[in-house]
Image (cartoon, rainbow, N blue to C red; front, side, top):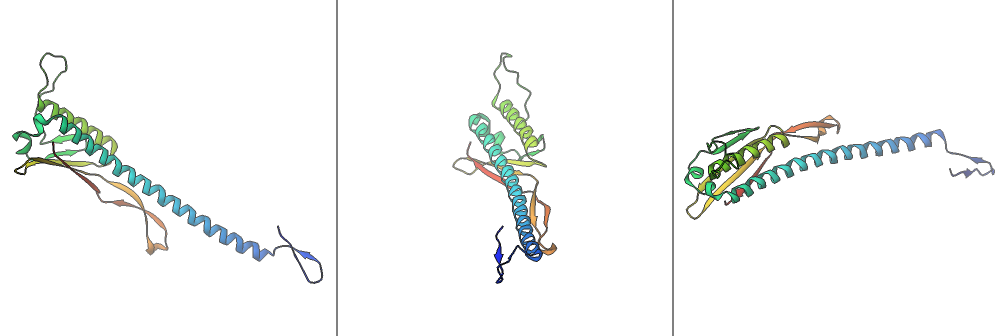
Length: 182
């Protein structure tokens, strides 16, 4: 603590008002740091969800590249879009379950059905309220597919109407789209 001297040579410390002003300034600074930390944590969560969606879309694209026997056929192209909601797959390839080592090899349709179901299970485990659509079409030169994933995420938003208080808001269904050429 620094001390100042009066003109008469006597020492005196900080006044109570000076200490209170310093505490108020310090408190405001600490509140600002806490708000920035909460916003950074929320942004990290949002980025994590988006990263998981990108990784899962890429995972399905890799499976499509490995199974061109199904994804480049008329069955994949003329079918209605494949819909995924949670772990449920609709409009996907209808195939009986293939047992590895049962003698007969799995058909491309069975492999595609298995890949889609595993992918749907992974999406449901990683992303809240997930839905996805896989659409394939022939553009005249090649087969193109799109993988579109939607999910719900919560983020910390700054609401200026309530004196800058941080509030939790749900961002309505962000999406990630990947274009694939199987």
